[in-house]
Length: 356
Image 1 (cartoon, rainbow, N blue to C red):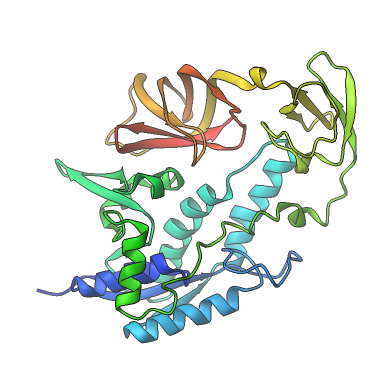
Image 2 (spheres, rainbow, N blue to C red):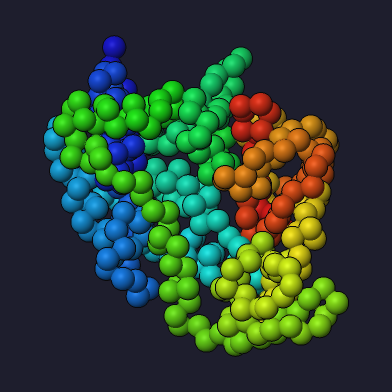
């Protein structure tokens, strides 16, 4: 029987490297794939390392090539600079400039890692049957249908970031680390002598240096107002603020103030006290349903409004054009337009959308 070939999305970190090694150990033919996305269009400090987007990419790719050579597997670099700029960077800028707070990691996984990387690798002649990554996620099959399931190590679970992928590809995905804890992954790396065994966690996107993306855009200062419309301060440009933010407002007040809303149209920041940041309802668009068939008009689920946010029971209503309403049993803190909401049935990822 012919062995399956699995392509592994590799970044040079310990997780994707161990994923490739485990697949080899389990008898698969393995090839490594790495995205080339850095185009130098943004002035970032060269010292930002282990960030998924930045000037250190060439060094990262060389690390992956060495790991693949040590594992004795072929490696291919896939040029996705144009796609990344259009699908992640331009999206990120549009959202921030409209007063929203985007999650670039959700978009990158959906459009890049589980989209263009697979498609363009195959178009360039790389042959493989299935695709794998070092994400802490599991898949499960029931009655011929395939689902995304939370990782065994819930503290490392990354299903939230995969809410946008096409459900048709789940059957062809492998997540070798889904049943493991991080320290077990590092132990495997030490056993096989991978030089990245002790490498620190990678930084997402550009290590939080978001303002540098907007260097070509002149931002106007504007008013910071309270809920009554009273001007109580000045802001230095709306891209520096997000819902729930407390630090950096530069306002002296008897009680701490937080950003309630970013009003891009009028170039204003609206602030409030913490108790007014709670809400029990959100609407979301571009909802991606990962279960078989079409979504029912209503269902009960648990919803997560950020990766590190605790899920909360809610009633979900599905509308036309992939829109949903989420009504929480208990009010949630700082529901933020532009962020993603993920829905769960116990450990199974139902899907997700972008908060309006």
